[in-house]
Every structure is written in structure tokens, then in C-alpha cells.
Length: 273
Image 1 (cartoon, rainbow, N blue to C red):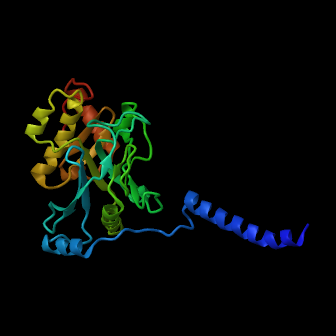
Image 2 (cartoon, rainbow, N blue to C red):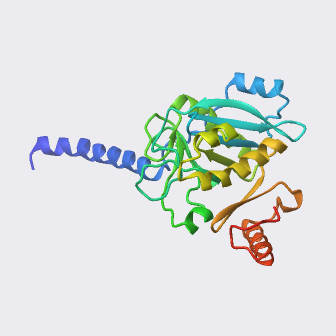
């Protein structure tokens, strides 16, 4: 082996080690810097003016047609108020639910974010998993994976918010979870579900699905508190009754199915909720 080859080997070995470390950081995230997001001073000040404790729970609502993501936060009296609205930079697909892997459709429905949903190593700066498919989606054979709200402005079935907006949204989500909120509701709608908008889309084949979503939409509008939502086979069930708030989805689904059976109805029949 030549002298020049011997001299070149340490450099080559070092380069290989650096490349391996970089690849490991991308694949596992263990060596990457953990990103946490940050809440702006202006938003913290707004919480104070709106009488929203910084540690209070939050709710996320998405409206496709209006291309907006809203963060609502619990006020001191227990009701929720609108904290911030963020324009959605990009979402893929059309109005309507996601049905299958690869259809490039952003989901609609009721989901939950918990600590396991957070991705501080996302290649799109920051991200959290919406939780699609839930039990309701799976009962209809809907498929898909890694459906996110994330940074950037490109979407393949996700909601892209830009890095700057996602920095704060992620920060608000993380703060709420660290403050004790077990899971954060995320409600994704095709549009603001007013009577006028429902009439405007009356001929859309997704209307039966949207009418079901509207039950949950109206429950929040009437009470100012997110309803307890259970993703059941074939339908969502909603309740604002405090005694059911700590019940599991399975318990609510079973109670609803039992009630429907007593009334002689099918799974989509009347509900005690």
C-alpha cells in the first residue's frame, strides 16, 4: 500500500463515520436536536387578556374550505374561546373524508392527539399525527398512515402550516400536554357547518357523513365545551353529559348500541347521547 493511501485512510474513515452519524440521526432521531416549538410573547399576552390560564386545555379545529386551523383554549370559567387562527398553507385532495392509503386526501372527522402523536424530528420541521384511522374509519375499511399537521407548504394527505406557524401550534400542543391535558381533540371539518353551507353542499354525496359531523359541531357551538366524542363502528357518538366524559369509547359505543337495540333500530339509530 502506498504512503498516500495510508494517509488517505484516516480521512476516509472519518468521513464514513460522519455520514453514518448523519444517517442515524435522520432515521432514528436519537442524535438529532429535539425541537419543542415556541409560543410567542404576543400569544401569551393574548391568553392573559382573554382570561385563559397558560396551562389550560386546548382544542384544535380545522376547516378545509376556509383553509384555516383554529386553536381554542379553555377560559377560567370552563368554556372555550378562540385563541388563534392560522391559515393553512396547503392540504391535498378535495372536500370529503380520506378513504384509502394513497388517495392524497386529507382526513375529516374527530381525532385525538397525545404525547405519542408528537414528532419533534419531522423533516417538515415539526409535526403531530392526527390519529387517522380511528375506530370509526377502520369500521368502514378506510386506510392510511402518517396523516399529520406539519410545517412546510407541501401536502400529501396532510395539513401543511409553514414552519413559522407550526412552531407556535406545536408549542401550544406540547404545553397543554405537559400541563396535564391527557389528549387534545382535533376536529377536521370540510367547512364551517352553518345551515347556509350545508344547503350549498346539499347535493354532495358526502352529505350523510357531514350531517353526522355537524352534530358534534353544533354541540360545541351550544355549550362552549368540546363534546365527548366516541369513534364507534359505523358512526360517531357525542355527549355533553359529565357522567360520560370519563367513559371509554367502548363503553359509550356499547351503551349506544344497546339503546338502539331496545328501540328496535340499527347501529345508526337513536342514541341516549
